[in-house]
Each structure stands twice: as structure tokens, then as C-alpha cells.
Length: 142
Image 1 (tube, rainbow, N blue to C red):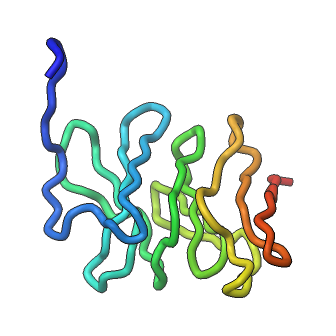
Image 2 (cartoon, rainbow, N blue to C red):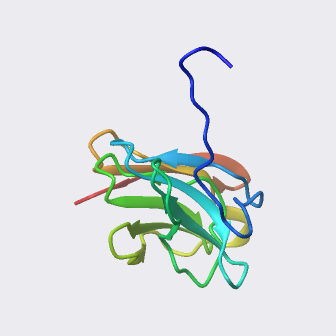
């Protein structure tokens, strides 16, 4: 271990961090919250958060479906965007309110991969297949 580096465990979840779909970690821009995917009490993959200072993890989403890919926090840390139920979703971190922001696509053309915020938080970018080819889509706040 390099000098000056400290390692400490901050999560003590009963089921651990999810390996399905993956075990991505993201932090809000201010570093106050680390997000991770894990199964809830019904084994539905949800977004959880924990302080880098430790403490109890907090359930951030309560969806009736599993999150199906990487999530990202908005630049201001107020929202998380992710794919689930063949759609793009945004959840407000403070209250867990989730909103579907695209239509529900078919299994062959559902959003794939990470949903990415623009630097100012006014747009989201995502991939989905059209006629078998992966394409880039942009959601813009009006």
C-alpha cells in the first residue's frame, strides 16, 4: 500500500453489492454519496446510497422492476438516471420519486448501457438499437 493511503470498509450490507447486472459504483459530484446497485428485500435490483464516511446504506429507488444497467447521478446530485423496464428513468434522490422519461420500448430496441447526463444537467444521452444497430439518442429538457 502506498504511503499516505488509507483503506477502510464502509458498507456492511447483508447481501453485498450486486453482481447482476454489475457492481458499478458512482459518486455524486460533491462526493457526499456513493451509489451502488443491490437487491432489495424482494431481490429486485435497486439503487442504494451510502456516505463515504460510513453508516447505514439508504434505499434510493423502490421500483417494481430491476435496474438493468449502469446509473449516473446528475451534476447537481439531485437525480439518478438509469435504464429499467425497457425505458429510461430518473429518480429524485431526496424522496425516491421515479419518472419514466421515454416510452417503454420492445425487448429488441430497449435502452442499453449507461444513461449519461450533460455537464449542465439539461440533457441525457443513451443508446438503443434501431433495426439491429446501436444508435445514440438525446433527451433534452424543454
